[in-house]
Image (cartoon, helix red, strand yellow):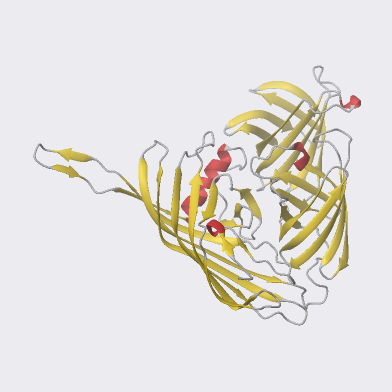
Length: 449
């Protein structure tokens, strides 16, 4: 076969083409599951009677609720639920939760995973030149989906799997003279079966169904101007290179903010700065970005060049290079709403490293002054600035003037996932004049009151 289409755990549909660059497609996943747990029994001395199994049913929303609670326990999400309209989705590299606009809110690949068997049955037609389905290719294989959050402290402590026969269909339209084609992907596992354990270690058996759907347009567009946007302002992107963690970037008019996702605590993945975007063709662009060097080594900036090829309005691929790193990988692109408040005056922000436990509280008296408290005791005060770098990312710089920390500087990158909550990455410099590494840094969440 010239083309093998894989759907690993309903999480990866990828096709290789000699003439077509295919972007990572976001696939919406729906789940229904019924779990059966052993019920009690009674022996009257003559007959031992066991009651019907205890039954629990789960749909996609119930799975999303479990994932939100787990992400909150990890300090990666500020609520026990995801907002209305959220969807479970999968890319070639990860399981994610997205909002109604398909913006990634949480990477849940540490909880959900999938694998497929070694045998695949393929049927349908494929174009010898474009390597696309002509118009449809079908595959059948055994797929296993695993949910396991038992490694998360304070999580739901549930593990289970479902395994069954997966059938997948890929349909491609005939490319236009400009190379434009639309691909539709569908997959399903009907009548899957498995087993697992509840949080109290009680075993259960389960059955269920899963489906995935995706549709995207690829290739050079026939619309004048192509897929490359005129500006990146108001856009968000998720990127992943090799085995590294997925990173998320959002852009303002001339500035940007970048964060890690999931449990990523690598300081190099959290930064903000300025950028220049140049559209070099209908479907290509070049980005030059410079970070402001404050979350890993104060004052040390890093300039990165990026070449982007857009294969649809929602993504493509990129190649980047800088002094310290380089890589190539897929990119998903979506619009993002402005969530950063215009001012913090009169507001209080509580920062959490451990879910439910307030690490520090910042009281912003006005647009200039702040007071820091821990467990109700004042531990610092001084002046601050709030600088917005993208629709969702801002930097709070605090200059301490209290006797205990006089001259110290703190930077917190705050990334809003809602108008009042989000993720934060913090660095504290006791002696910034000497260009020291941060004395204290870490990933957590925050709430604005």
